[in-house]
Amino acid sequence: MPTKKSVRKRNTSSRSYRRRRSTHRHGLAPFQFIKKRYSKAWIIGGLAVTALYIWAFWYFFVGPTGFRWRAFYGDAKYPEGYEIHGIDISRYQGKIDWDKLRSNALIDGCPLRFIIVKATEGASRVDPNFNDNFYQAREYGFIRGAYHFWSTKSSARSQAYFFLEKVHLEDGDLPPVLDIEHKPVDESVDDFQTDVLTWLHIVEDKYHVKPIIYTYHNFKEKYLSAPVFDDYPYWIAHYYVDKVQYKGKWKFWQHTDTGVLPGIKGNVDLNIYNGSYYDLIQLTIGHEEN
Image (tube, rainbow, N blue to C red; front, side):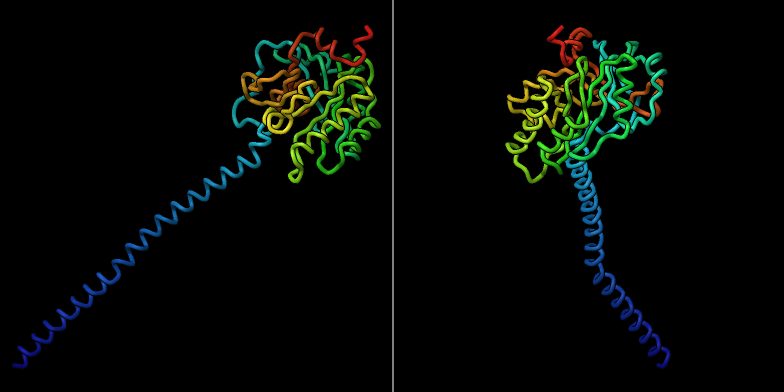
């Protein structure tokens, strides 16, 4: 009897253990399912958020100034079918060895013809290398030009008069250039266009030539597409493409920012002129008198 009773207790205890284990296993099963399900949801959600951040970064930062982002592969390519080449320079090119640049600089086998120099920015900044670069460009026989970098923090009128105060173009120089790449976020397109025209008109009254507008094609199509701007020579910035995608007329094309030339340390922007050398000379200030 004691033996049978002992066996019965063990059997009862065993069944009770299996019942508790089964209850425990089945009781956690829904939670394990939920855990797996939410783990997948977290992964999918994380990937979606990452994709959203990448898209936002591209749309708001890379897209609007995409031409300013260097290619991640390969060397700079030269557009085919153009023979008149030039560069634009600023303090970022440092001190230039003009003898080397004049004697050895070839772009796709063609001589360097024109140099456009950064002069001013906003209503108070002069590029520290402007005076020397501007002087040397003419001394070494290049057709030269000067550009103003538009600021959203100063009025159009103050920027125009500041440019005229600091830059003195002469016959044989290219028309003044307005480099405009940003629009104030709190300004309407109509008001923005009025400001741009204010700068253009003030400078045009001084030199009696249409200033050149520099910007990238998406910016022009979005903010400067009014017919009145078609009267101004257009210098398009469009990198790493075989041909210009802009459908309108244009005079200059800045096609890369990774150019390498003797006499200049580091990279430099390369440009082509859409025409002959004679046409380029005809574009310069004072050509009507010749």
